[in-house]
Length: 426
Image 1 (cartoon, rainbow, N blue to C red):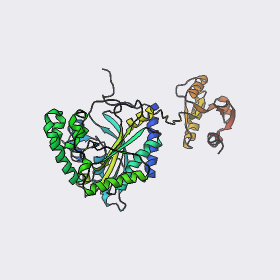
Image 2 (image 1 turned 120 degrees about the horizontal axis):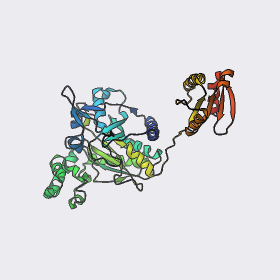
Image 3 (image 1 turned 30 degrees about the horizontal axis):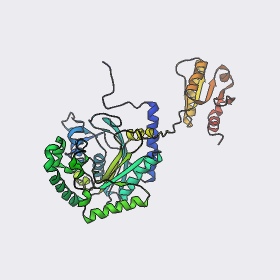
Image 4 (image 1 turned 120 degrees about the vertical axis):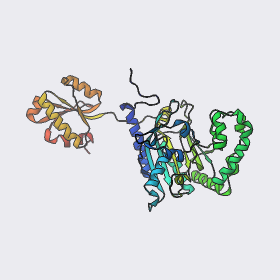
């Protein structure tokens, strides 16, 4: 049998993982500036966390979750999205009692969804997300959107489109729900099976259907914006006002509903408009979810957040020809001739590394000429040569691979000298 990675998963090899590392470091720096703190939750949760937190009527819960029983007979599910897990942790650890509110969190996490794999959408996906819990201020909605847009822009993306909508409060949604039922019921038999079910469970999600999106009834469906009460309309106007004040361009799309049951008020998506990006243009999406904390047995606590697919982010960077600045060079490569020289090379390399200098050596017992070729392939800035002559004099011959210059350095001064050479004498 041929062993391969399971369908819908990929290996991220070293030449790619350095790109991931760069992107994650940049995003973490942005989160620090926005005063968000990192949270890490378990890879799996009790299944009910997602059934209650994500919603029984969603495709994620009905079709896509990886659910299993452990040896104790408990139903567990691999994390399909980040918000429910963060909210569960917020409640369990009583973060609602923190004196500083709201609680502003971010995470990097792997998610698992059983769906048809395609470019940018795998069964094991990597996501960056943020959650703000404890404030119903529309300025927080704008801040969360601003953070997401800043991540993309500072990484170099320019072909972006921000789309926003309001899903209203419970009263507004209830009125809109009935209007959607009345509108789509005469066309029920013309809709796909999923939408026939959604008609009674969550009719707003019919507007998000990919199968029925060209149905004539979609174009005439009642807009949530026509059913917003005064409070919801004012809230949405305030969010737009904050975005405008920060110079963030956006479009209002009355059909933007998002795929999860817990959203209300602000919903948003960020899409790539880069040529050649692909049919699935959404890079990130999120919104407000007042009421979700209560669903997971916490006190009434408003929240808002988003999830950003890292695979899609890297695809967008590639589509816009944005090079990730990766330094693949090596500080030092030690070339040793003979067993005693090899021992000394190990000792010196250990000391160099302790002093923050990147160093490596040959482990294949190759000849010196071949070791130099290896150093060249690794783009070593300096080659440190240790042979019989160097051992006798207790020196190291240091060759600058850029200029070809060589100098002899006493072994006891090697760390200090290399630090100076690598920093340009600073």
